[in-house]
Length: 147
Image 1: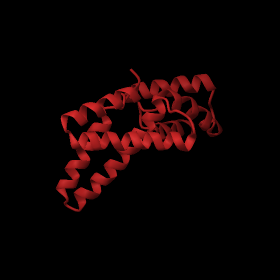
Image 2: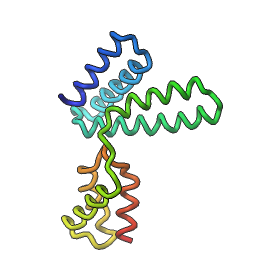
Image 3: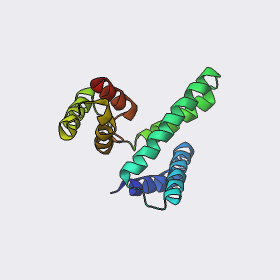
Image 4: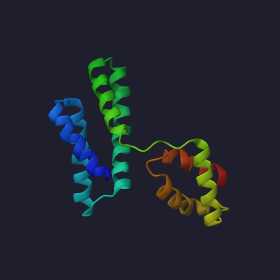
C-alpha cells in the first residue's frame, strides 16, 4: 500500500471514530500534498510526501516551543498530538553508524575529495536518506569530512 493510500485510509478511520485532532492533522497533510502537486503539476511519490511531512513536523515543533514559552498548555498539547500523528508516517530514522556508512559509500561512488564535490555527494545521499535522516545533520557531516 502506498503512503498516499495509507494516509487516505487513516483519514476515513479517524472520521468514523470521531478523532478530531487526528482528522485535522491528516486533512492538513492531504491539503499540503494536493497543493504541492498543483504547484509542481505532478503526482508526488512517497519521498515527496515524506519531505512534506518532515517540513510539517519541523514547523509543528517550532510552534510547540512557542506555545510552551507562552505557557499555553492547551495549544501545546494539541500541537504535540498533531506532531505524533504526522511522525507516524515517517520511516524509522537511521542511526549515526548507518548514516556514516551511507556517506562512506557515496564518497566511494563519487570519488569525492574536495569541497567542490559536496553537491554531488549530497545529491546521492538525498536520494538514499530522504525521510530517514536529518539532511541538515548529514550535510554537516559531509562538509566536515570534506573540509
